[in-house]
Image 1 (cartoon, rainbow, N blue to C red):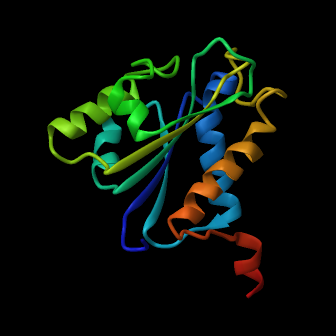
Image 2 (cartoon, one colour; image 1 turned 90 degrees about the vertical axis):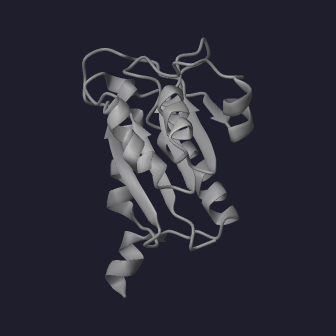
Length: 168
């Protein structure tokens, strides 16, 4: 599986507290882990359609974002390819920009969509103006990492803690 191009994409608006969850998550991964060369992490911010080139070059894409659902803040929701293709999820997942699902549809129309897309989403609690996550969402960083790590291990991707690499 190491020959496949893997993307981990965090999206959101860093200026709106929990809406920036995906960005905080990617920053944490960049600071704490070393990934194999075939895995690329991207802080997608609110780039919208500008994310298409990154998405189009991935075999497997993991998206980290908030999801605008009526549920307890910090609740994790997973969406697979089947959910996405069957239309079982709302078109606009999060409170920001052009929806990722529309961008994926555009990639498919162009014939360059990832073979597999998995979304790991979390329900926000606070969307006020702030660059910090709420106390409700901070623990979700660990939970989402556990979920992602399990998915990465299933495709033989084993990130190394940056502290181990520095000690070597």
